[in-house]
Each structure stands twice: as C-alpha cells, then as structure tokens.
Length: 578
Image (cartoon, rainbow, N blue to C red; front, side, top):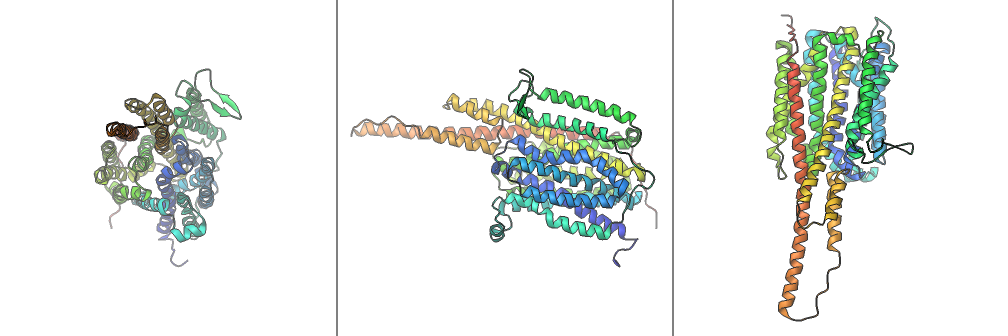
C-alpha cells in the first residue's frame, strides 16, 4: 500500500501494537469497574470475584514465555494475530457466561490470547526501533496504556450502568449490562486484526531453532498456581486450622484439623525450588534463561517490574470495590471519580519515556516509585463519609508515580538485551509483571478479607441491644461474603426480628395506659432503627479501616520498589546530532 513505506512502517506498526494494547489494558480496567456488579448478579464471594481477575492473569503469566518463544520461532506476527483471534472469542464467551464458574473458565481462554499478544508487542517494538528510539516508542506504548486507563473508567462505568441504551439493550435482550464490558472487545479486536495483516511485517529469530522447556512450564505453573490459590482461598479454607475442606472429585482434602492451605504454600516452595534447579541444568532454551540475570539492569528491572505491578493491580482491584460497595457510587460515578488518576498516567507516561532517553531512566523510576508510595499512603485515609473532592489530589499523586515508573522501567530492563533474545527476555519481564499483578490481587485481597472479618467481629460485638445469635450470623457471613451480600443479610435479619409477634395490649381505654403503650412501641421501633444503623455503620467502618490498612501495605511495597531501583546502572543514550 502506498501509504506504508519501509521508512514509516515502524510507526504504523507501533500504532497497531498500541491499538491492540489499548484493547488488552482496557479489558482489565472495564472489568474492574464491573466486578462489584458481577459479585451481586452472580451472588459471588470476594474470593470467587478475585478469580475473575486472577484466572486471566495466571493463564497470562504461565503462557507468556512459551508463547513469546513460539513467536520468535515461527513468526511474531503469526502468533500476535492468532492471539488476537483467541482473545476476541474469549471475550464473546465471557459475555455469554451464565454463572461465576463459566466466567472464570472463559477468562482463562481470554488469558491464552492475551499471553500470545503481549510479548509480541514488546519484541516487535524492539525489532522495529533502534535503541536510541526505543525510549520514545516505549513512552508512547505506556501512554496508550494510560489512555486506556482514562477510557476504561468512563466506558466501563457507562456500559455497566446503562449498557448501549434502552432500545439496543431491549433488542439484544441483555439486562445484565456488565456483559458489555466483554462485548466491547469484539469490534476493537476485528479492526486490530485487519490492521495487523496490512501493516505489520513478519519478524522472527533466524539465528537458531528453539527447544521447548515443557517441564519448566509445568513447574512454573505449579509454583504460581499453588501460591495464588493459597492466598485467595486462605480465608475460606482456613490459614492453618481447617474452616472448610477442599473437595476434589468428591473427596474432602484436609489433614486432621490442619487446612489444605499450609500444604499449598509448602507445595509452591517445593515446585519453586525444583524449577530453579531444573532451569540451571536445562541449557538449551530454558523457559527462564538464568544467565540473563547476570545483567544487572535486567535482574533489578525484573524484580522492580513485579513490585510495581503488585502495588498497581492491588490498587486497581480495591478502589472500585470501595467506591461502589461502601460509598454506594454507581459504576458511572466510579469511573468519573477515577478520571484524575487515569488522565495523570496518560499525560505523564510519554513525558517520562522521552525524558529517559535524555537523562537515563534510573532516577525517573526512583522518583516515580517514591511518589507512588506517597500516593498509596495518602489514598489510605478513606472515611465512611469520604467525598469525591477528597480523592482528587491523592489520585493525581498516585497517577504521577505510576506514569513516571512504567515506560522507563521497561526500557532500562531490556536495554542491554541482544535483539535476538528480546522475545524471550520481554516474556520473562512481562511474566514478572503478571505474577506481580496476581500476587497483588491475591495477597492484598487476602489481607483485606482477613481484616474485614476481624474488624467486623470487633465492631459488631460492640453493638448494644443486638442478640448474640444475630451477631454471630453477621460475623459468620462476613467470612465468605462481600459487603453488599452482608448488607442484604443484615436487612433480612432485622426485618425478621421486627415481624416477631409482640405482646398484645391490654383492653383498656385509660389514656395514660394507652400513651405508655404507644411510647413503648415507639421506643422499640426506634431501638430497631438504631440497631440497623449501628450494624450498617459497623460493616462500613470495618471495610473502610480494612481497605486503608491494605493501602498502607501497597505503599510499603511501592517504597520497596524504590529501594530496589537504587541498584540500577543508569544508561544514557545520546541521539545523533543533525
């Protein structure tokens, strides 16, 4: 085509890759906005709703490296377009899901497509751009990720709340509007596929034939899955003493009074050690080439990438839950509230990428991580009566930190990697990013669940006038259900208590006795009303305290990332003078 020349093809390629990245990142953002509504519609628990995100992220993390290698072997364009097709079909199936288990299963299918696309975007950028231009290319790549974070809250909030409008909703017979957050990928994916065929030039590693490390794939999958499952389901099955037995093929799995969770942590450690020793001795194309970690920036960057993703994804998962469940925001209002956060990332990321080409990425990353830690700590000051204007400044601070960190971190990590190894190296880095995301959601989600259960037990037991049976029922429900589900249970219990037959009034016309009876009935009604308010406040304040403490953990993780970034060597690429 005349409008594509060898000189400008790299920029067209970057445009297509960024457009596809927009779909991948947009999917995660709009799904996060829809999660509270999915939780209610499918009557899911917090741990189940975590799997909606983590089923995708786990699959993504496990398959990134082997599919990145496959792209190096048979062609990155082929694998990229195949991944696009799988992702679109997976999105369609997610939208058609009839229960939470189907949705989790189809998110796995989506994850396969995402894992095929993501490493190809980075390796195709590296194959098309010289080192001196990669900073700005990565900056634009990061800027599009920021743009999707802007569009995500607006689009996700609107679709979850309104769908496509009354006429189209009725025509399509869709009443659960969160399904549109998956259907939106269909037109984007189709356009991206057509453009990819027309624009992207095939590239692959012509130097050698790759051998697949199947045992390494299995051991890494076992390590990640065991660890993630333990964190997500720890509250349900019991961190040590068994609360509930895991059932596999009809058999209850536990060890006397000891839960399955400690065994899963031990199994993860065993698989991890086996993976390490296997990779050391698998010299022909190991899934993770440990020799690459002799490169200081690569090893530091991989760790820092996981840490940054841990803090970011934990925040993205927690914020919509708080805004919708506690403050009662509609999805549209939730999206609007997140806009300062998203706009800041979009504006800062390209600037950070360009600046890193001039002064080097190291100190930009350190500054970004430090600002992000401050922002996370600042956000962790929610109140039950928090207003939108209270959130603007902490969201902007958090957005500046994320925007400064993302693009320079990717650039410095892959800077010294030879071009023919970029596919495998970027796969490892992106896997680290996904593992960080999985751990962020799993660990911070587990901490949140445990804190909510503990705080509700304390706060509910302090409510005077509430029968012990009702207190115990509320506390037990909290162990497995989300905030919205708890509120419904509490309201049902109060209604039941109010409907209990009261002693009949004596037959008398004495005004003083009738007035006394009326005053007693009024006092009883006021007592029940106050108990309802006390329960509602106890649950809300427990959630607020818990989510604040969780953000303090996120701030500490971001601060750890800043410490790790101090160990980078700072490369500076000087562009040629004209």
